[in-house]
Length: 368
Ligand code: MN
Image (cartoon, helix red, strand yellow):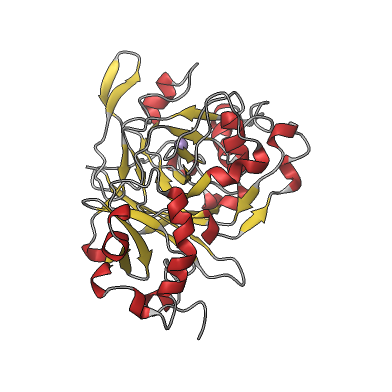
């Protein structure tokens, strides 16, 4: 028996997002915890009972981590009898909900290539601000408008310039990696960088929709506000940290940074963004300047408490190459931007040599 094969046949297909080694968690409407396997969903309520009847994963992250090895065994080739047939549902029949009740959402700016490309638009001779290589930059986003993939996005109106209020004419997407906090920390107790990954439950895809005209007018001196808070889309499946092979952090950001930020793993996750089925950008999270552990350690370094289900996002993930840009602002700063009816799809996958392909599914949104 091959330990990597599942008796759920679709999980063994080449290029499948959800092989046996992945098993991401999500929430099926109206409120069961589910696990994706191949093109099916294992309904944990139907399989294991009331403990898994829930509308969110908050408070279930430790139980999920403990269950993972058992699920790998039960869904592995040759052990079919442990799972009742009615517990497996085609993914196409499942309506997905947000995986967590998100109390707080923080958006970082961890891609040095994105920061450089955007900075160049304003400061061609010195694109990167002097703090960039020392402090992980972020802003506090809006949790109430985080929406599940597939929800239409209504074009926001706002102040576009002095004396002008109306629908944004510069609506953009931002391709990002999302990170969900499993166990939080008490107020006033920072999380050390070496322990930070233990607080990271898993990852999802994020589209941080942005209205560039509103942003340009409002962002100084306190950063983005209404240009971002109208909608943020996320993918429904949370890929657990245990499913991914971490890569050691690049030495690049260890020399100049303070001791409380030294440590943490990078992740080798390819992200792709499509506009009306056309590939617009392909980048990789290994090119981020800051690791998830560094973001968590910095976020809590002042004693700020993170809570289970908090969403952190990486910021737009861009690479060095022109075809690796994660938003339209970097590709064509004068437009055209998104039109009504346009559809943006973000996909992600990790293809580490010698390890099963770990897919993220997709994060989809149409401009209404
Ligand atoms: Mn963003």
